Length: 319
Image 1 (cartoon, helix red, strand yellow):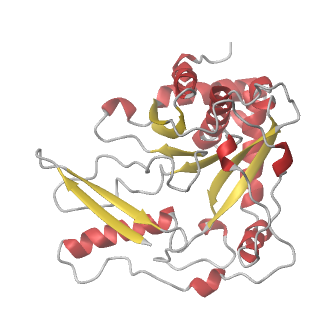
Image 2: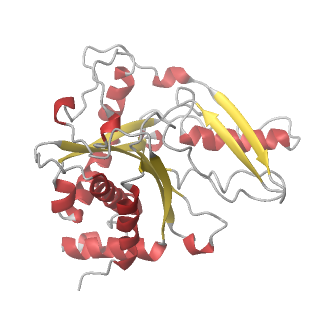
Image 3: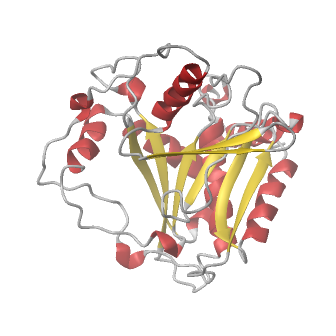
């Protein structure tokens, strides 16, 4: 469940590739593991944050109620570009000003004065999640066959560590993630107002941090799964957010900070549906305060996705 590969370049820089199993840790656990490795490599006898196992805290029980997915496999939308073996990988830059304009436009459109406050405003994740989902659906032409009852689903990876009734000790590095879902008919990401999609995403996140919701997937992990999705149809978008893991800020190799972090292409989880929101690269000042969006798509669909992401820079506030 653990792989390291170091590539050193003539300029003196290097890349560190790390492969971890989600059966052992999640992103937060990885963000604790890498600084610990750097500390041990620098000569320290023990890491500053002691790793904690204690997996018994989140062990489930076999349940007769398997985890129910909101989308039936019979009505999953398909893309004319799939299946294929010809994939492209793209990391799109999203500057902070474009995100701010989009959020302000959505808040003005909502007409809710309470929502206009910073405390109640839409988050960057909620806003980008809706925009990415729509952009990906358009790029894949999911509605190409005219079947309006076919469905597409946004699968959001939600960290629930701060919301557990029994707080975990510092240093616990096991999985503390659940999945939240938003499902729409294949036409809706295109025809529904982006504001409505953002609200659905916010609602699904709120449900996902409920203690009863958190408990059910933990128990369901002990139960054999009977439902299998065709993730390669293009209908399912899996969205992760790496911006707050501290992978760039908290790892000290003793001379210079890390300058960039990236996921592996496409097969990182065996699904082309995976999209990752990344922190800005320290090598590119133009991304400061913004984000990057990493996706894998059929090469025929990638130009449209890039066009949609570029259009984000031209969004204006509502008049």
